[in-house]
Length: 232
Image 1: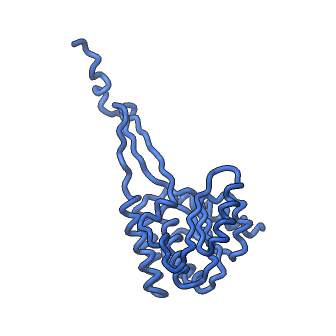
Image 2: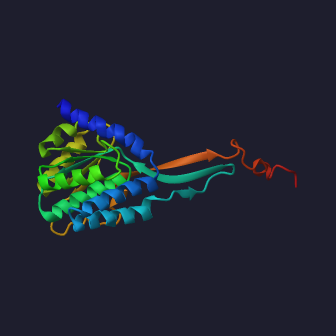
Image 3: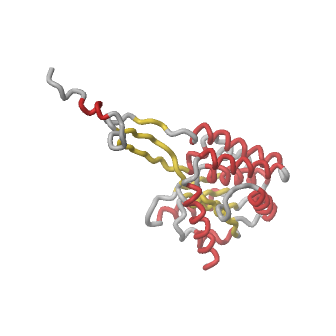
């Protein structure tokens, strides 16, 4: 139990800094991860690259919002926290679905704990992780049966690749949790993998935030506040 708690603690600590890292820097780290995957599997690298490219078009830029005179408001995205990803299916297509979830969770600004007994996949991902520039501890690896204990931690996203039966069980477990709502990203069609092929998958691993800056207080155009104050 302590071992799994330590995994979560390490991933959470790494996530706090990762979430403050700008998108372009995160993208560079994930591209290095993708390049390292090429040595093991071109298909796996292609899946990672597919989601990196689509995430760049969705998450890279903040959006200016309309607000009162004297302040700026922008909408931007951030990671939710630590994403727990569970793999029950070890088929090749299921492996690619896991890679899709790991990649999108990371580039969206989350830490990741992968619970899997797929030795081949875990070895490939660990090797690519070590060769990349992704921060230490941001990705943690655990056995499949560890997920029950890890679900008791403050995970903020749950990814699953496996059967509809277990998916339903996980849904019920999440419904009984107290605290923040945990998003479930589930791939149960491991033949067609529609979730892994979704170009908007990264949006399921983010939260939206707004940033407001009082430009008058920081030396903005104060004359704007005087408009309309003169007698006409």
